[in-house]
Length: 212
Image 1 (cartoon, helix red, strand yellow):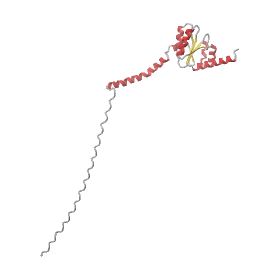
Image 2 (spheres, rainbow, N blue to C red):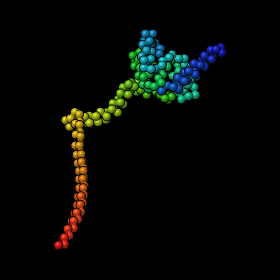
Image 3 (cartoon, rainbow, N blue to C red):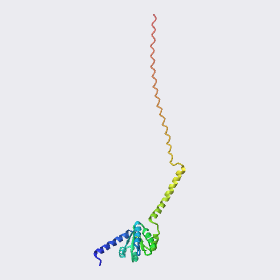
Image 4 (cartoon, helix red, strand yellow):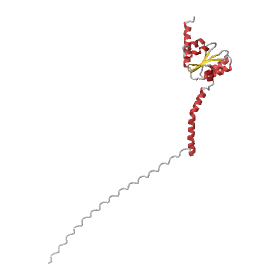
């Protein structure tokens, strides 16, 4: 009978495996029987570089981890030697790499898989394996978005070229508005003519001296 310590370790392994499945966007289960050390090392390296976690796992642990979940449908493939490959953010990497490896190695077989906690059959896994890499998909999407922008940029450039001006000519500064003519200083008001001095009153004619 397993000791309490062994049971605790097993319980922890099941919890970690369950969390791994919950966090994965895609996973593939394979039968790795017959793979040699050199090929296994090469495969693990390729999967690791693609961000895929790959581990040889006991069927009993997988069974306990998926029991009562949407992945319980994988129970039917839990026999023989089993390894699990999961990816948290790439739907195609695990299926693509493992399918290529299985095609080149007769004793290495894909047994099942899932996407977003939904079990998928081998036909869907094969179709998934044929999809391009995430980088190619992103590049394709970016090209689709950039095409209209590039076309718009070319149209703008054509307008500029047609004008024959590499740099728009500087707009002529509007002619300086003629400075308003200096208002003619109002003519000094003619000093009112000096009032003519009143004619000296003519001295009264000398009274004629009375004749002697």
